Length: 288
Image (cartoon, rainbow, N blue to C red; front, side, top):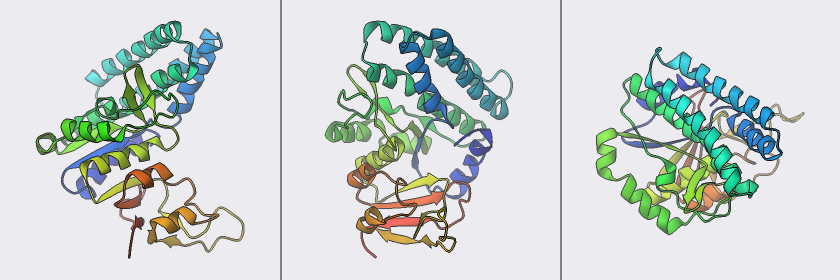
């Protein structure tokens, strides 16, 4: 999801393609994660001027999105200002307290998901879609392997059942949360590559659901990579077994869903195209 036009597609998806109560996991917008990584790198390297410049651009990017989605004076603008003030203070304070670059990385980069989830939750509310923001740091418990933390599944599943119970879902219908991030006693953690898909799988397993839906910018799994010369006749696969999905060679399946998602969630995984929600997509299942 890269900006306001994409966010404006969400009401249609919630109204027409998400049935009943839902828990939706969102990533950072566009290239926010990469930009915040550079903020950390330049700050630690001692180039605070460049770090401040990059962070200012990230702030402008999010404010521009908000300006397209909300009327002047909406609370989201003050919230974005507060979050960026918090980022600056966190960067200064955590760098003084802890010289572990991966620790500092997790404290700062995780703000990308926090910003996105606040903006999306407020936007859905403005267009009449009931929802509640529940932070992933309230339930995704991990170890302290900063940069690619390992999830404590027993504690996390217990937290999910307690934090997102049937009464909360009945009251708000749609729960919004962040992918990619978790918590340990020392601070926020990140879950590594494709962390948002992994978060979705964790929540699905914790809630005992029989399927999860991963919204992507592709129509599904292809039988071969259509971007390679000679593969212009590539066809989308409507259904693929989990083991076959892992073993498809030289196709768009590679990198589409992280193995950790497949490992933690044993139900059906539906891949749908965010840009074309009416398309069938691909189902990854255990049996025909």
